Image 1 (cartoon, rainbow, N blue to C red):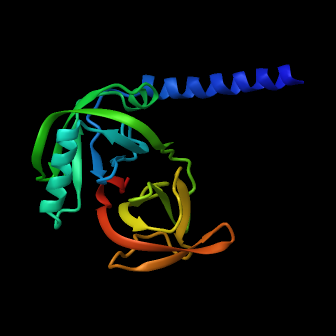
Image 2 (cartoon, rainbow, N blue to C red):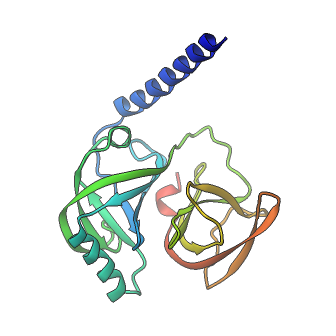
Image 3 (cartoon, rainbow, N blue to C red):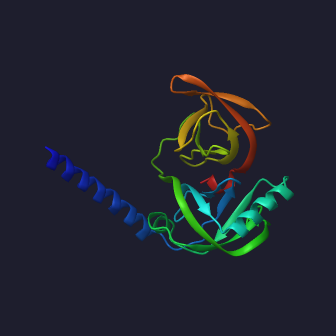
Length: 231
């Protein structure tokens, strides 16, 4: 029986590997812009679209060298009115980079790198520390009628990104605060009546979590996007 279970596991593993390999084989090298945020840890969120090769929703933990990390933190402190920071990486095949991370180079922008953002550092060495969340977007996905968010973070900072499903949709990144440990990502429904952006003027909302109510403090909005996910 153990041999049968093991053989079944090997078959599944090979199938998953094959699917990841096929995704990489179909995609072309491209510039995969990402929003970056956080001070205790640096997180990156791939800015997705509903077309190849950008049809992936991904959250990463990144590592910069200490000088660049301090520069990024200092810039956030000096420009609190700017909540969106992005990186413009060198071209690569995204699923290949996720499956086999390697050092890559990127420029850091205060603002959106394609929409008038100000470059604050260039040719920065970037290393992927952890793949926090990975999802290939599919046109066959059924769009939910609820507002679902992916929550992640650490003991000092926590964040939430809208779980994208099917066009037309929207992107939203929030800095939040909960009383829960987020050692791994969790998906919560923020609104059970509609699938729409969440207001963040210092609001506190309650969500269902393991049969109880969990308070979530919405501290600030870091990014909101509709145009890239219209179709």
